[in-house]
Length: 251
Image (cartoon, rainbow, N blue to C red):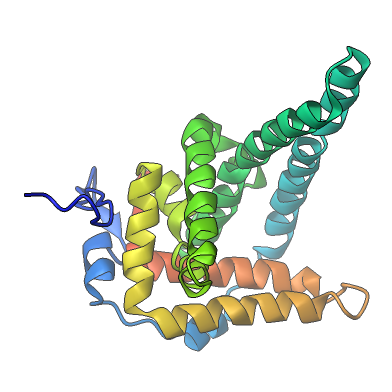
């Protein structure tokens, strides 16, 4: 008899569509891949030249699109109220539209990670490549909703599960985009892989957050180096864990 209370399972068997480079999903889930997070940060710093400007251009492009998406609710509320709709209902509807709009920008974030993977592998990198993954917007919206719900549920359940999932899902977005996974499959692959290297992965993400936070203090000038540096380091950790598809590295 099946256990109706069992945790939902995703089909995590990942079959290669083509020859890959770097790590692989199966070994990452099994915990067979060792990664030195500080060493990777050092490697990223050493090869940062040639990536900074392109990363900043791509980040600015994403930020503009993100701000437009974040502000899309304003004219909706004004329009609905002007037509006589209830203000509370208008706000709820506008918030839902805003969530969907913001989620739709997430493939661009994955695009920046893929730029980092390509740079680390000495491939050509173009900021405009952040637009290459807009066909994954439906999946990104589902991913965003599922991840938010799971983390929210985790915080409701004594907080600790929410903290765990907040870090465990750290690679789910590039997994979904770069490896063409479903939203749930990407969330589960990331969770299982990160659990195997929990303390190192959590420390790595906290260090990135700390670096970015400190970079904001002296007039944000250090962010010129910090943002592309940590973006590249994150991409390199992703590559060492899960590898990259041949089409990702194709010129």
